[in-house]
Length: 218
Image 1 (cartoon, helix red, strand yellow):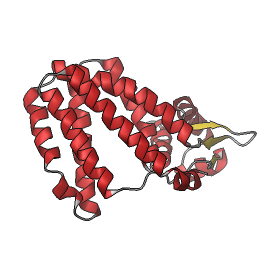
Image 2 (cartoon, one colour; image 1 turned 90 degrees about the horizontal axis):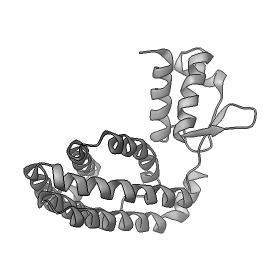
Image 3 (cartoon, helix red, strand yellow; image 1 turned 30 degrees about the vertical axis):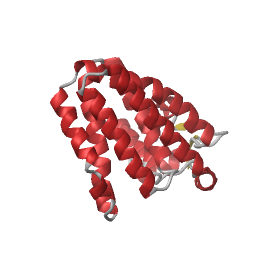
């Protein structure tokens, strides 16, 4: 792997996982030393991160990790709704019903996962990831798939703003079951509608955590 590629993935992971929180200045000298690369490949990595919106120019000091706010989240959810509703509709038309039927059944019993400790919640999030991958594989549209992948980088950062809420997680499991069930039934319109409901509820939940989110992101 090229040095610039290695630096890019290392920085990207640190930003997404909040090891480099919003507002962190990514100085060339410091980051080059930390990552064990020269400044030229580091600049390439920073350029890619800036193009993706994970970093932004910072007056005379390289770049800075971009901030996250409720306005940012609302804009991303507008895009997310457009992309994910279309993806769900296409998956209903092109996907394997049996795959999504099994996912529906797993989400229907997900309450058992969510009544446990943190590792159990990790199992639930893994199930959500499996639904995302199943939809990705079903849509048959490389351009839509790339757009979704680019968007999800930012969504992972936003998810860190909202604390886990047991009631919300249980409701989300039901919403995911509805999405998977509509896709399994081959009903694209219902799949899109179920996706829209889930995204609306997710954004509303984020808004309720905004006071703490603002402190976290500042």
